[in-house]
Amino acid sequence: MQIMDLSVLAFAFMGVVVGILFGAAPGLTATTAIALFTPMTFKMPINDSFAFLLAIYCGGYYAGSIPAILIKTPGAPGNAATVIEGYPMAEKGQAGKALSLSAGSSFIGGILSAFTLFLLAPFITEFALKFGSPEYFAVCMMGLACIASVSGKDLIKGVTGAIIGILISSIGMDSISGISRFTFGNIQMMGGVALIPALIGFFALTEVFSKTEGIGRDSVKKITEITNFIPRFMDYWPYRWTIIKSSIIGIIIGAIPGTGPTIASWMSYNEAKRTSKNPELFGTGSPEGVIACEVSNNAVTGGALIPLMTLGLPGDSVTAILLGALMIQGLSPGPMLLVEHFDLLSFFLWVLIVSNTALLILGLIGSRYAPYILKVPMQILVPFIMVFCVAGTFAVNNSYFDVKAAIILGILGFILSKFHFSMPPLVLGFLLGPLIELNFQRAMISSQMNPLVFVQSPLSIVIWAMTIFFTVFMYRRQKSS
Amino acid sequence: MKRSDVILGMTLIMVAIWGWYETSTWAEIKTVGISVKAYPRAIFSFLGICGAIIGIRGYLSKDRSRTVWRWSTFLPVVFALAVYAIIIQYLGFLPSTIIFLISTMYLFGERRWKIIATVPLLGSYLIYLIFVKVLMVPMH
Image (cartoon, rainbow over all chains, first blue to last red; front, side, top):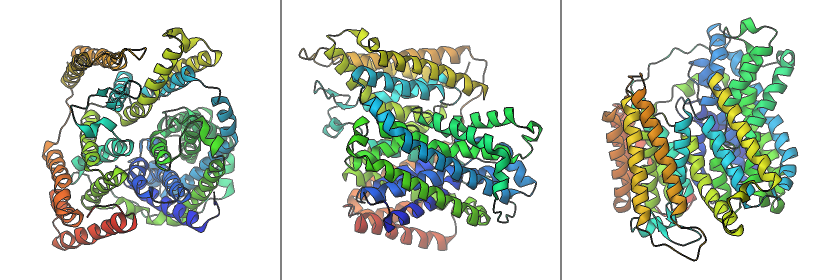
């Protein structure tokens, strides 16, 4: 795989720009951007495609801090904690400094997590190769349990969302018996709901429908003038332990299937506040708070790629889409991915380094232009996003059926969001549903219908114990946050 | 009572009951060790249980807050998108996209005629170039 290709650099740079634009526009996120642009990468070579998508990922996660700092509105839930310190800094006339610290911190978190991915993934792959169906079933259940426990305020709605996702994934022909399920006699439904249309529906269209409610009603917020601020080494050195702790938290939380940056940044913020030498400054515009949140927010990127590359399970909502992008490129995410394509790992490391460097440069130089991104006219942008959704969905299989499916799932996602469901559990249920069913059936058939097969091997017992531990831990952390 | 949760809970229970009924119409396949109905029925059962919990919790809740639906924006947008998805098959990508963009931009409150006249034309053509000419997607 050509990693020093000029086109890889160009696509990585473009991806960061796209990610920053989507991440900074309030109401739009990196997830939307990747859902929209994945269909455009089908015909690209794999290295260009992933350079572009991973760069959107890094740029988007960083840029959510821009509206958080400037207008007190996080660009994505993962930047919510940044508001607490970033906005007071902007009010004190330090918006440029806050934005620069955010860019620098995102760079540090992103780079550290990229190297962690590179170092840990081969070991986890070796471990995962020992997995049989019962262990895989247990890992999938861990992903579902973790995401349900961190899904918004409501555990039961998180579980329900995951179940709805599993049900949607069961539409179509049963892979073992061949029977048609919930197709209502429609031949096009026999193949089930395709992955990318479902992701565009659940993430992009749901977000667009939610956004339409606010168009014309958004109050115009005053944005302060920004002067460029180039952070020095000494701006970070006093907070070195906060940076290390936040990176570790971001990487670990990111690596737990189904979690994501929201809980990572809140945990890092709380930890930084708890151990700070100046806790009284928190809430009044503490640079340490901004650094803690943004380091862990972007440390999630490399962390979330670990389960994707080693187990074929998404670490967060963006990697759920990247899972689809890998499949579209003809790769099978799972333990065999790195065995067959080990060069992919060094390529990902390279792209993450390039993308994080690009976001640092663009973030530092471009901070004075940040207010212009926030003034993007939604009444023009949203219709174009809808066109991209339709064209992108069609492009997957050249099928108008997929377009209709995406619209219906977008409407379903919007209605569920009105009932305070969050989309990640639903999508993870959709992704893990077929894996859960397949591994459940395989394990049961191979054990002559003995349900104890799921807790017989020491590996299974460890995974189930980890599932219980993570679920309880996450749920308690989430509640206390 | 939190009405939205009660309605949601009842809906989920009804879906679960429908799921059980629907699976009862499937033919049993004996060659496979597990019944083909078992997995979907297990999922529908969990859905029903979650629905019951949400419904009962909503009924007992002292929260009186209501979900705000802005149908006046949502329904026209969904309608426009649905119409767009249909007419694109007959009119082709460019004309239907231009019509869609103009109508939705107007719907969202854009009234500057210069913008409405130029942006949809140029934007549609740009997207057409990307998808049809560069990516070779057959959307003519």
